[in-house]
View 1 (tube, rainbow, N blue to C red):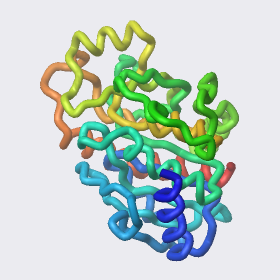
View 2: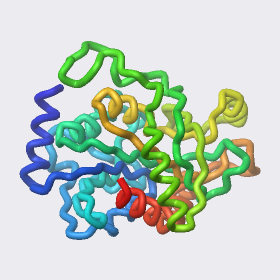
View 3: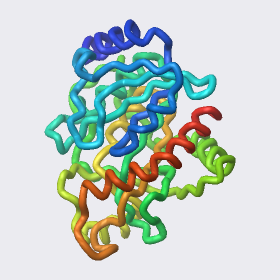
View 4: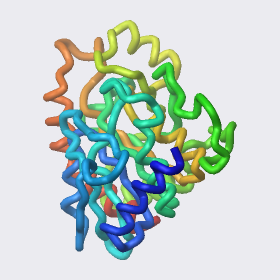
Length: 270
């Protein structure tokens, strides 16, 4: 794997030249953030060796490098998912490349279903912790010590320091943010009302189909991680009617302006 990681990182370094300090993985419907990067250049995922294509709806499939203020940012507009048939090592490949590029801070974002009844559509939730119910872990298998510790600590996956910075950024921009626990499932089917009740009993505030595997690998690589969910809908059984991917994307897109403001101010303060 290390050879594939280095090959991908080499192409990115050649094409983008300027070394980024912060990486942001943009979730479904949140790709508009790349328009805020100044002096931006981009590379299609298909042009990076070994980089998996992002085929999910709402994922552009490109790397965009630019600046937010004085901070050099690498935005990943789109990710791959287990539900697309990719194994965990492929889903998390981008995170290992980010670490190989020398980036030390990673912001993981997603569109999620709200389990906490106090969350309305469009709420931005800073992730305090996660629950992995995907049935998979990206660190399973043979271990290469060059990739990090065999048994990395997960007692503080989402850095307390970065969460405090996000809170300060939100206060400065007048943006209300919530905090909570994100629970990940494999998908692609949405959860049943009974599952949502069970997840709430477990302590989850939001549910989605991404982020957690990436966060695990990021911590193994020594990256400092911040997670932000855009609550795109109330989870199954909390409101009448079926869930729709179109509604999720529409809500995330509507929240894009506020989300972008929060990301701008947070990155500027890192």
